[in-house]
Image (tube, rainbow, N blue to C red; front, top):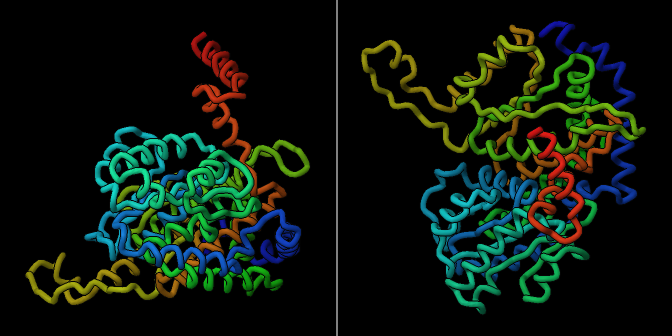
Length: 449
């Protein structure tokens, strides 16, 4: 419908089907050999029950869960909270029966201090998450929050109000947790941060704010079974992966816009942005060839961004593919009052609903993009509940992994992030990173020269 120059033709899809089969086999081999662990996370129900039991034991003793983490250690929890309990900041009053989630995922000092000032130490449960146990931003913020907690609640109570999620066998955070007796949950070494939402990384904060994490895993397990289906027509994540791969490599669509038409999925769009960018943006392929491949993800919110971005999308460079995320059955249709005002621009809307308007706006945007030769697709959730969320998260993770195989890259490393971390360690004086401090000093001299 968008034309052969920009859209994927049936012939192109058929010709690429063997590549999809190879990608499926590749991801399955990585999974069965233990190289990657995210496909198995839905089976970790024993861990989920342990987390639920811990949350039940503490229920009613706190009104705030303060999550200290960054990247994959924070975005998944925000996405779950936003989707399952409602978008921030309109969740309403919070209490011990309905605790709020405060996420400290940046080291902007004003942000951290204002967030800390908004909490009560005796009513706060702190969850610190870092797979390596040494992420500079997380450790620095945790030291501030820990000192605040001890000062306000006392050392004894503070010890029972800190939960650690980290690797089991490495990292100073794990060593401290063991020495101090903090409650600790571990994540598998073969699960990277951006694929960890269904591990303890996402399940611990989710359970502590009252989300049914077993239902979340149940939905993810259903999608995992679907993702291993060999038939392309039946395998939603594999088919989506192939279409996005072809849009990138055959049609030059180097940008993907994730376009949720539901505020509850806004956090998921930011979680997806990290998943897609870190997994697929790579300098080299598995053969060691320099490829500088990747598809840039953008988060847009419908209908909000129809009034801020769509002009560019309709008439700007034809370098984008659009993925609309819609919900078939919103919890509340938002009825518009039946009230005749005498104004034509008002009266045609009376008696209808915001849900209908949102749906019509989404369909209209899709149609307009299509008429302008802009390829787009739609993911529709029947409703937003924990089971459907588990399915959707797992769909997007499998889709990402499949595209990585099609591009012949390692979708599970992040070398581009590590260099910046090493410069940070060097400039902050961490032992063993003096060479990176010198490299940065040399860079500054070149920049100023």
